[in-house]
Amino acid sequence: MSKLWQARFFTTVNQLRDLPSTQVPEIAFAGRSNAGKSTAINILTNQKGLAFASKTPGRTQHINYFSIGGAHVGQHRKDPTIVEEIQALLVDLPGYGYAEVSGNAKLHWQKLLGDYVQRREQLAALVLIMDSRRPFTDLDVQMLEWFAPTGKPIHCILTKADKLNRNEQANVLREARGILDSYVDEDGEGFPFTVQLFSALKRIGIEEADAKIQELIGLSGNDEDDAGAEEEIPVPDQS
Image 1 (cartoon, rainbow, N blue to C red):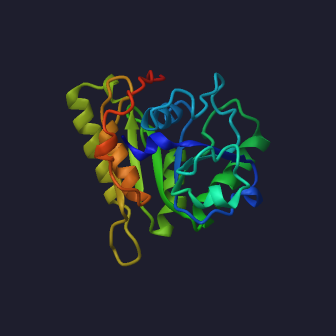
Image 2 (cartoon, helix red, strand yellow):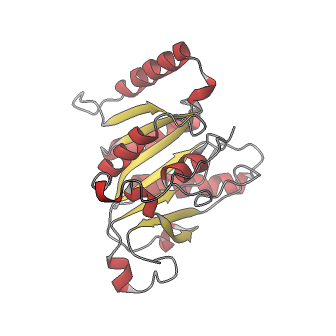
């Protein structure tokens, strides 16, 4: 059983000052509205409704935290004994790029997202969720360029890969790797950026993403003793 299946709601914040004081590694999920971020989080954690997918994309304006470890931590997050049991935190960032959101909300999100990914010391890595049919929009590139100077890893997940044929899948993966390889630091060294294809509907890339996320936040791999202890919950792909 993957340790990501232990994920439970921890807290939600709308201002940087309210970020939790925990010191465990965090991995943040970012992506354009409608890219399938909530679906990816839910299928990776084997839960149908952990990450909320609004019927009106772009309306979720908060940073939502999910804990790995710490029994019932959502109900007891002020209990230091419980909090100490947390091994890592998954962070669901607000979706960006939805046209009907007000200008004030967009400015708030921009500051919230930019400040969080650039300054949060506990943030170990970023998972950038992009629709494989239209990756690297201007806002995706902005997120890359906000985070790249930190020198921390970015893992790009290209969702809805089932909507592409094999040729298209190979092409988009090659092009994505080319874009990521073009980012270099002041010494000409490449950043720790990786990319993969993913489909919740056809269950493409789930094990690869699970292993990479656990690696990035320092969790061990699947516990063989628990293998098969829980049934995988199917999560439908969201177009």
